[in-house]
Every structure is written in C-alpha cells, then in structure tokens.
Image 1 (cartoon, rainbow, N blue to C red):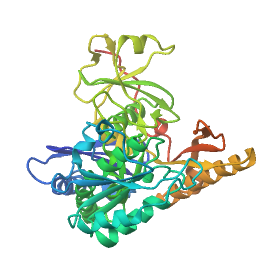
Image 2 (cartoon, helix red, strand yellow):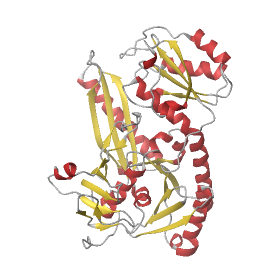
Image 3 (cartoon, helix red, strand yellow):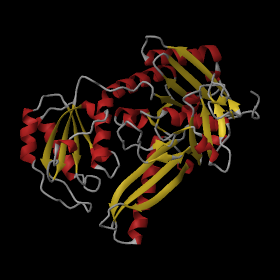
Image 4 (tube, rainbow, N blue to C red):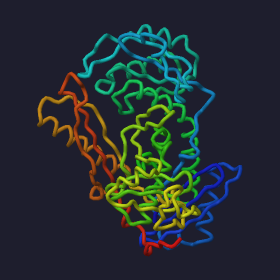
Length: 439
C-alpha cells in the first residue's frame, strides 16, 4: 500500500492506495501546530480509526510539500561569479527577480572554461582568498563559473577556498543545475540555497513523524515533473519540489481517469489548468519560466491556464476532472467534467507518482559511436539511481532519451537528456467506476 500526503498551512491530507486499487482519504486540521505534528496525528488516526494498516503493509509514503516550502530570510546569500571579466554595466549585475532578493553581495573572480572544457583564464585564487578572509562568518555562498557544465574544476576549487577561509554555513554550485545559461543556473542555485535551511528541518520532522508510525515505509517527496524522489534529497535540492503541486494534481486526475496518454484539465474554479499526460507522467519543459518570475533550471510539468484556443485546437477532447468540492463546469468554457474527485487530487497524485530521475549533462563527443556511448552511460546512470531509490531493475523504463547540439560554434559539444521512471503505471493503479457525466 502507498500513502500520499499533502501538507498545507492549515491541513494535512492523506490518501492511501491499496494494492488491489481501492483507495481512501483521511485528514487532520493542523491549525497552528507544526506540520510534522499534524502528520503524526493523521497517521495515528489512519491506524486507529480505519484499521487498514493491519491487513496490508505500507510500502511507501510520499509527501507533497510545495505549499509550505519557504525561504530562510535571516542569512543572505553571497554569490561568487567566476568569469573572464566582470559585467560591462550594472544592468548585467543582478536580475530584479524574486530569487535575487536573497543575494547580499556578489564578487567577481577571474576564471572560467570554454564549451570544450578548456581553461580560458586561470582561477584567481588569491583574490578569492582575500574576499573569503574578510567575509562574515557563517554565510551561505553560491559559486557560478563560466563553462562549469563541462568542466567543474573552478567551481569546486572556489568552494574549497571558501570552506577553508570563510567558515560558511553552506556552499552551493551552479553546475548542480543543468541549463546552458550562466544566469539561470545561478538564480536556481541562489533560490535553492535560500530554501535549504527550512527544507532540512521539514524533511527531518517528516521523517521522524513517519518513522514513529510506519518505521518500515520508504519516504519520498513529489517533484516538479510529476514524479517522486527520496525524502532525503529534499534537504539538498528543495527547488525541485517547490512547484510540484499542479504536477501532482495532474497525476491524481490521470489516475482517477485510468489515463496513460492524453490531455487533462483539472477543473477547480478560477485555478483550473491544463496539462498533457505522456506514458503516465506529465509532459515537461526543461526549465520553469512564468511571467513575472525568474527562469529556473528545474524540470517542470507543462501546465497552462485553460483557454478556448487551447481546448479548441486539440483533435481529441481533453479529459476533464473536477477537483474535490469544485464545480463540474470549467469557468467561461462550459466544459463539463467527466468525473469529480472524491479525494484530494494532490495527495492522490503523491500516492500514485512514479519514481523518476533525470540525467542531463553536456559532453564532448568525437563520433556517432561516442555519442551512443554517452547516451548508454546516461541511461545506465538513471537506472542505477532509481534502483538505489528502491525500484527493482525490471521496473525501470526509459521514456525519454536523446542527444541535442548545444554549442553554436562546435558540433562536438552535445547535451544528453534521459528521463527514467519506475513503478506501476498510473493508468492502471486505481479501481474506479464508470465516468459520471451528470451535473
């Protein structure tokens, strides 16, 4: 049996999915209590009131924490930018997006690599030591270097200097986030660094609360692409779970509709949205980009507002699922939901979400054979990760695998992109009745 838990500021909702496809929901109002305490009481209520834990072992608990993740405001982030030269003018210094509100200061250090991984100029280690020696103790740092996706040497060397001389609280590296843009990687690392302190505390609280009730269950957290990853990774990369809510709802709607492929509309009043399910998971975009927000390097479900143009342009009508307690009609379009959810869609999606992992890396290849070898190595790496997450090797399936050119001037530099899933397909997970089309 799998359990999905949606955590919000005023309620903790849990949905269980049994191996035979039956499912149900329990919730507890958290009020002013901490989320972990509310979760503990909710799990205890499952055991004492429903009794379902007595006849079927709970194999996993997956949390959706996108509604409660928050930045740590008291310790600002300092950015170390490694590039051949500083920006030409102040307009290139910092973006005005929300992620950069966390930046306290930025220091420019000479260094960087080309797209082939060759050093442009040596790292100015002496200048960085001088900065680190005078910086405030206990700060958080983000290190970004030109060419770090191909050669991480300067970022790692800068991190070692900061650890030795600045006594930092943490050091984050932009090459941990895959994007060809120096600025996008930096923004993502800055935001992630600001989320980490709270995410660490939250992950620990959730683990302790769950272990007290279900000590043998594997613990996971939902991700922005509609999958799940081990709860332990929330402490290091919370940005990959910050926007998981709508992706989880898409998974929940697909599960209720026994849908493996097709367009889905979640009808929930003014927040209704549209998404596409492919091979049992949401279609994704390689970076999150919304109007008025900074672009972030995180694989995210492609969700769009429901418009007449979007719906009318599809050859096959989308599947419309009304959220729990929501009207069946989609506002302003008169689309009627084929099913109304009888449980919380986000918690259901957390329970049904598959294990997922991405391998996205920039590599240098000299022939088609080397390209195939790089792709095979990436697929093997993704498979190994999912097995480490708790999947059986036979359950792993590669649903996306490809190579794309990246550098304008050098065809030898390519981007490898692999998406792997594991677990039961979402379309066959639930036992549901026929669609009810009555208003």
